[in-house]
Amino acid sequence: MGLKSLEESKTEKLKGSVVVPASRSRMKLWMIRATTTVLLWTCVVQFTALGETWGPRVLKGWPASLSQQTAVLDDKVSGVPARILPPKRVYRNNGYLVVSCNGGLNQMRAAICDMVSIARYLNVTLIVPELDKTSFWNDPSEFQDIFNVDHFITSLRDEVRILKELPPSVKKRVERGMTYSMSPISWSDISYYHNQILPLIQKYKVLQLNRTDARLANNGQPLDLQKLRCRVNFSALKFTSQIEELGKRVIKLLRQNGPFLVLHLRYEMDMLAFSGCTQGCSPEEVDELTRMRYAYLWWKEKIINSDLKRKDGLCPLTPEETALTLRALGIDQNIQIYIAAGEIYGGVRRMAALAKSYPRLVRKETLLEPSDLRFFQNHSSQMAALDYLVSLESDIFVPTYDGNMAKVVEGHRRFLGFKKTILLDRKLLVELMDQYNLGLLSWDQFSNAVKISHANRMGSQSKRSVIPDRPKEEDYFYANPYECLEPHDGQLLSST
Image (cartoon, rainbow, N blue to C red; front, top):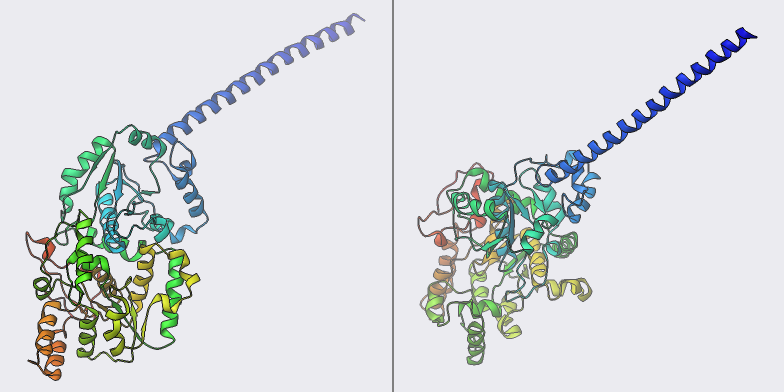
């Protein structure tokens, strides 16, 4: 009995000695887990804060890191095979660049290419550019209404970080007025942006550049910068799928009826009022155009001699002059001509001579049903985007004025293999036409002179002209981005 009691007593003591250490072990385990959890959350918070500049993609879904739009984009990108995306560029972010473009579609397009290139070389984050809504066209379209914004962002991720909007924490700085806004100096080289613009970005963290057209020089820039301008223009800036599909439909309809020529007939009311060119207009129309020119305060030139400007080659060709020029160049009168333009000033009356010489005139409005274009009504930039796509695919492209669309399409067609683009010498043409109309030249003499003078003006391979201290008179980079073009038929580049 005594022995049994002693064993039972030892057993009870043993149980007690086991219970106490087990309880303590569980407490220690719980404390370790709690401490580990706190440490992990601290790390996450710290990395999230850093994620705004440095963080990996997995952290960018957190609200403190990036905007909600960027998180949505990352979700989309995660479903795309990584092999089709360029590697993401990692660099120390110097700040944020907000861009407000001005002008029409192609003026803004070139500005976007410049601003992407500048952002990349300054190591700053670019916010998707704001488009002009206050110009003559009064188009309310946003960037994503015209361009494929997700493609724009992801296709350039190895060069520059682009966000749809400022991160929330940075937005608060803007709301408190802790930002800076300015217009950069026109035709500046990249050193201007390094020396003058970058310090402002580093100081204010957010810099807004407005009126961004023609702000980067044509020539003398690093080759990598020039090639990036091309990459943005020819690859990153894709139109929305809706615009692309409608453009393909128009091209298909045209191709069903043979080759076609796109005529960029820049004879619209705004162009005539701005330039002061009134050749062939009635006195009432001249008054109307003059009133319009004075109504727009930012059109600085008010008193204009139309005849002198025309003789200097500074006016768009009239529809009548265009018909005469096409005939002199030997353009087949049975070819389809697609009019890439808005409403022609003077309507049917002014188009009569062109329609008589070239009866197969078509427009997007005549090729498509009204329902097809309903979405594009009152959105001139989206209409211009449709004309841009058709212009790229045409057998011949003829602009009657060297405006922004004419220049950018010319450069894009060079990039596509030096497609035939007839660059009209308006100063010479009006001189020859006046002599012909006065009976000083026969038709054969007139036609031969026109053909000879334009033999080397078909969008062939050439270098841009360089005019030191007069950049506005140089060939425009986007009309002839020769640094980005493949040699054509073994020809060497030559100056023009």
